[in-house]
Image 1: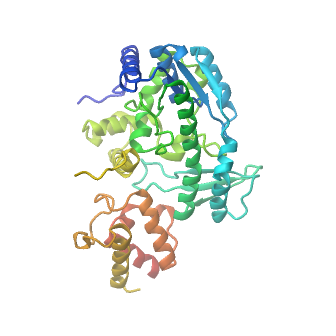
Image 2: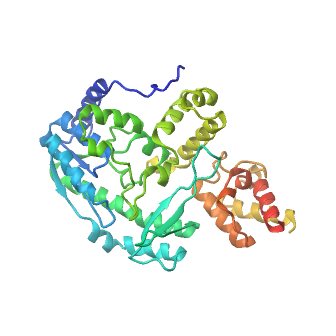
Image 3: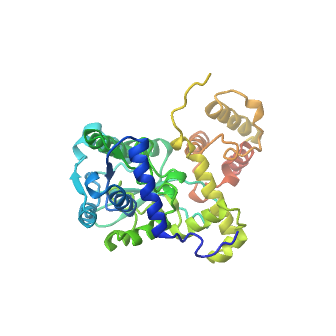
Length: 322
Length: 85
């Protein structure tokens, strides 16, 4: 196939019309629901989905639920409100900090962090990152834990298995409680929950099973992140949201999605992935993106590995068939 | 450290942990864990935790690569190199 710098450019007007028609059909005909509930974080994905739903169903059939907790960015709420004003839908704020405290989210997470850094306490901020750039070497995706004190001094260690699993299990309570809250608001209105994950997140497994992965429809799960940006521009999503660096909004220290999970900037990752899906030889993709053939091949392998390794997350409950 | 002893120990660990002790003859020492779907990225952490504890060695970040960890053979060679190095 022809592969060039614009291979992932979309006709945003047509894509929007198609998406809106599909959202209407799926909510009304498949889900038999009469509106859309969306968790809005001030991030670009949830903003685009909310804007699409408001256009598809009318803003009166859309509600955006803001679900901050004590580690959330302070600007998430104001950005979500700017979005709601722009597209004319109602918002509801549900703080989930108390619920998470009740579930032991923070206490269990901190216990695991202290098993790695015994001096860690409330005065520190913490984050998990992937230290590798996937172009530079063929490495496994492992995680490092970084803690930062008030003076900005930081310490970093690779996470051992037990601490890693406990931190992930604890922090995943955040996404699962958000899903529970969304279904409360959906059921009380007889509306559907709309997922906000894009293709990068959905297929590489950057979501929590039955957390943010729990939804009735996922209208942008087939779109690369860089295509979500194109839709955002077309739909008129506020610039503050479009220009914000995508973060996990899960850890107390700011963590970009690139350093937390993907290990590569969105443009190069999406382009390399698209090339791989269309059997473009690594050398050809490398030429277009100004990297070496070896780097392109490494990225192909890394992306493939993530897709295979996260199959479990996308799997529906298995049943014993006859 | 005797490389054959290491190989047998690693084989035993992989068979018991990831294969539940079944169909163990289908796994060759040179088979890739990842490509054969035996171990995923979390499984690799399980492998490294076992190796670090059992052999009292520290695996550095730049050693977290398939060439060192992705098969019984690679792992045994890596452990022998580290332990004797």
